Length: 535
Image (cartoon, rainbow, N blue to C red; front, side):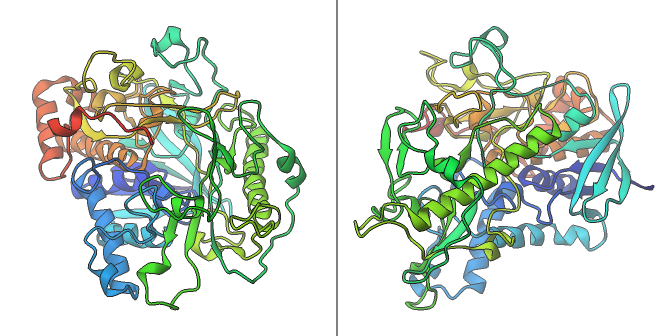
């Protein structure tokens, strides 16, 4: 069996994994990065989730490298696409003009920018990327990971990878399970966390819905109707007890009030933030940016409530059960597409169905038009040296306290509502206000294992606080901080735990982050005391 050794091994090439690689490489370390699909980037690319970002993302609220990624996306469109002069001149160009974000873009463009950011380090093999590669075993030696065995998916070839530091940047915390690292799945109980919105009793099988996103355009007068999905009749008749209408319908549940909301495909082309119809919500390619007639249609990305799959969890279950729910999520997404093409009430009252809707597998890099992989909102989470709870960041939970708790060991910042989607145990949205928050270094340190660091949604947060720590710029910041921590530990000959718990070492590390690496460690006062708005 082939064996490879490096300075820092990153398992998982998603948003956090790429960011971790960037910081480790910038600090002079060699990196091996693995990715289960054939695209790096995770949420930004293979999962096809347009960025969900904070209110002030254009000026504050992310690291310098994430800002460089955002500007790289805009530059890509300016250099390679025939933008109209007015769009070309837009400083804060939103290529898709989607209302969910100030930067909605095609997954392939995100991939191109990430590849360009990593290219200088691949030229001399400081970075090696192993695509279509997943972890299958972890070899432990006491409180340390000795090696990770990975499998190349097309041919089943296995290799053993080792490094002084291993980062788990997988989407579901796979190394935590494989290495028997102390971790949590699902929902904690109030006795464990004391959180206002935690369940009365812990329930590991209470996990947020997963979604299999897809891209589509619309060519009126044409017929691109797909084959009827196998479980279409089930989904056509399905309505959860807590949902205000059939799952396949334009009647949605308001995340905060839980009241019925009608939101159709084309009926309200309002482009204000979080406004308008579903077509404009996550649109990733906007015709209006180009000369008239140059493109036949917008392209929009479907990551809507109708594709939230909550019939069963994918963590803590058998491989067969997990596959059953992954297949179910795929079939739900295809069923929504078929329903929109054949039975959905048209916005103009002219009948049913939009047969001109067309799956765009060329946009997502797949044959069937769905994203390359599932979007999982919550991962296994390490039992950490320090865990962020609702009473540290939630507006209601903090009562009269203004602003989030201030963390002396901050390694970054983020801003988003605590946004939990309906769960596999039938709990509806938990969507509550939070204060702009910090990322404490203690949440990146497992309680026992010394050389494993989380680099994504698997840090020390709870089921509740995962809801505001799971978004794109925060995951990027978590990964980038983990990569920098591993590199700093190697460069100094100190452990990550010592760096956090030794004041001088912590100060030096934070100076490195805030200086050469361009991290933001604290919110300016004018933003720190503004809670997340009620959309």
